[in-house]
Length: 130
Image (cartoon, rainbow, N blue to C red; front, side):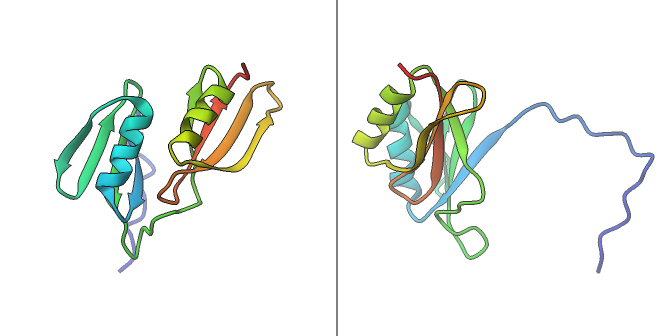
């Protein structure tokens, strides 16, 4: 069965921002605890299969990986803004993150670095050099 044709006269829905970003992982408890320690926040649970961190700017969720969403996906990368990239990079690496790309200077004059968390997911840091 095919999807219904879009209604060209339908009103545009209101998109008001990013609700959450999810990491799919084999161990939601360990992944959530790692990021909670990285950010200095507490792990919350919606249910036994979904842990999340309530950050001031975003909900960061952790869901069990499966055949549709395997762990360690590389098609998206979540970048966190930091005031001093090198300081944040050292903090993350001391907790088991591994550099994947960078740090490199962007064309807009800031710095970016892409890392793997200990669970195979990509995340980035973006900000000024100290």
